[in-house]
Amino acid sequence: MFEILRGLAKSKIVTEKVSKDSYSSPRCATPESSITTTEPLEGELGQKLRNRLKKICKDSLHIRYVDAGACNACDFEINALSNPIYDIQQYGIDFVASPRHADMLLVTGVVTRNLEIALIKTYEACPQPTLIVAVGACACGEGIFKEAYAAGGGVDKYLPVDIHIAGCPPTPELILKGILKAIDKI
Ligand code: SF4
Image 1: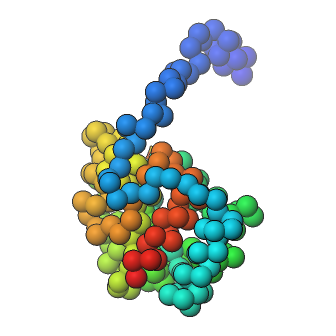
Image 2 (image 1 turned 30 degrees about the vertical axis):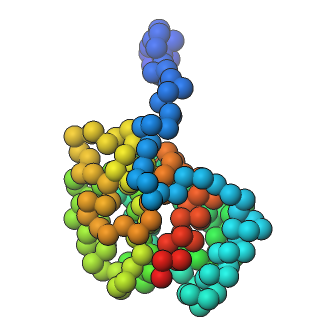
């Protein structure tokens, strides 16, 4: 125990410094069709979601979320949709464990080579048509891991993506906006 503490006290560099440029937008550039701006959630966006879901999905939209090689930050933002602040369930939207119950796939990550088959199989297990939303710069074929040896490419390379949501990571509001835009395509 004391040996470890002594070693820690001696080490000069604890961790690498992160430059401000690490989060600059060019690295997170996404296709032209992508969603890049936010707007207030409650009020206009919330009301639009409620109305569209009522009209098109009979008040119910089931989402299967797939992490296809994300760093987990996009996943945390998706998780935040279920917290008491965003409370996605108030609109009739829910996450499901099985792709067989899904109306929509939310995909994050660069699609690492070892997850390619899992992603395709998940899509094949969904009832068709299924909406596909690529969440975050990595899933849109950009982002900081784009050139990584294990990165297969954006979700577009594997599945017919309906909506791209930019950001590294995108905010929960932006993700909700993307979900709304995807529903509008039905
Ligand atoms: S887009 Fe950014 S936050 Fe999302 S998985 Fe890629 S690196 Fe992580």
